[in-house]
Each structure stands twice: as C-alpha cells, then as structure tokens.
Image 1 (spheres, helix red, strand yellow):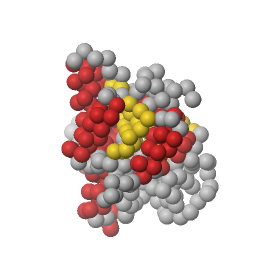
Image 2: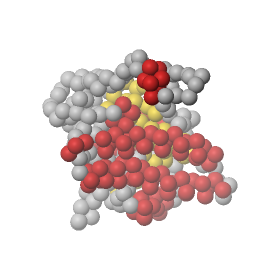
Image 3: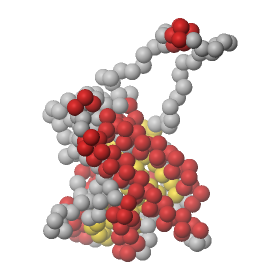
Image 4: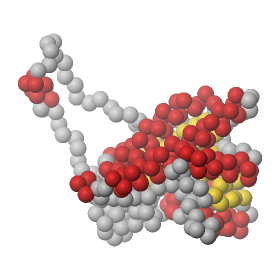
Length: 302
C-alpha cells in the first residue's frame, strides 16, 4: 500500500458492515487512524468492534464509536471520539444509512421520518460539527487540509420506485455536499459525494426497478470497488471538491451538478393558460422509469 492517508485521522460512519466497513479497512491500510462508527447493542458491543479488531490485526490504528448520527449531541460525540483518541480530525466519510422502502400510497410517517433522520439529518449533524472544528482550527492559524465524503444514491439523482423517502434524503445530501463545499473551501475543507452501486446487506435482492428479487446479473458489484475512490478523495493530494461521482463495479463517472435547463419558451405578452399549454405541450417527455442513465438496469441500488 502507498499509505496515502499516513498521519491522517478519519471518521467513517456506518462502518460496521458493507460499504462503510470497506472504507474503514482501506483507509486504515492506507495509513489513517480510523474512528469506526456504528451503533452498539445494549452490551456495548457491535460490528464496529469487529472491524477495529481486523484493523488492529494488520497493524493499523482504529477505535470503535457507538454514538448515533441521528442526534445533535451524539453526532458531536463522534467528532470528540476522534479528538480524544487521536488528537485531530482530517476526514469524514458519512456513510450510515438504511432502507424503509414502501410505495408512496402505503408509506407511513415513521418510515419517512426514520430514513430522513438517518440519511439527511445524520449527514448534516456530523458535517456540521466537523466543520465547526475545522473552522476553529483555521481561525487559530492552523493549516487545515480536510476532506468530507458524503453518500448520495441513484434514488436521489434519478428517482427510484418505492423510495420516495430515501430518494428525497439522498437528493438533499447531494445539494448539501455542493453548498458545503462552497462554504468550507475558505477553511481548507473539500466536500464531495459518491453515488455507489454495490451489493451489500442493505441492497441484496433489490433490483434497479425496485423489485425485491435475487439477481446475479451485471458487473461485479463488490463494495470494495467503491472504497479506492473514497480514500483518494480523503487524501491530501486530492484537490477535488463540490463533485458527485457515480461508482458501480469498475466504472466511475462524474455527474454534472445541478439541474440543467432544457427546452424553453418566450412570450411577448402575459402568459395565459392557453398560451402556456401551446408552448410546452410539444416538449418531449424525457422521463424513462425503466432506465437509469449510464447504469445497468438489472442490479441493485445502494
């Protein structure tokens, strides 16, 4: 390994399993001291401790953290774990999440709230407290070269049947990433997002159409394919910021950010219902619910 992250301290949320586990392991192998965050059970145990044990076994440095990302104070404690354990913070990977898929007509208030709380609020809380720390360091005259990697999803960028809650939260994360990058660049902080497509416990058996079914078709979607991009973005040699990257299998692409204006119409007079209809009714319908641009349709979203 190149130890691209030597000397850096990184937090990975939701790092007990799946994508987060792979991010934490590779970051540690590349030299980072890693705070492995995931929820613990009532006995103070959980998958984060297993990941820490793996890291320590190959000579890396890591500590487990069981605080929830869904609370203002508990998210701040995750930041404090890094500072107490390793004395600094250089990177955050906001990865924690879960699914509560349901068609809109059947979705409960709790299914909406729970997903938005973990994904959208959880990303905001950890980013907010990390940003406060880095701003203070910058104002104190310290050199800051920090990086945040958030996790959006195809559902948030293209929409997905049965995931109104998840898609709304992930779309918010993409926008949060861009706005935060523009705000925090003055303090030496880069903020980017990934939209990963990988077979994990979270996504196993969910097709790109939203149907729950087993599928072995498509490319190799090991979560390990996603982590090298995350580590590259965390490294102090990267200058990328305000970017959204799609990753599936051995494919990486960069998204154009923001909504792009397409067809347009102008009137020399005040619009009426009739004139608006005449102007827009001929515009092509570009929504294709069966196809996500650039990605295979037969594999699961993350």
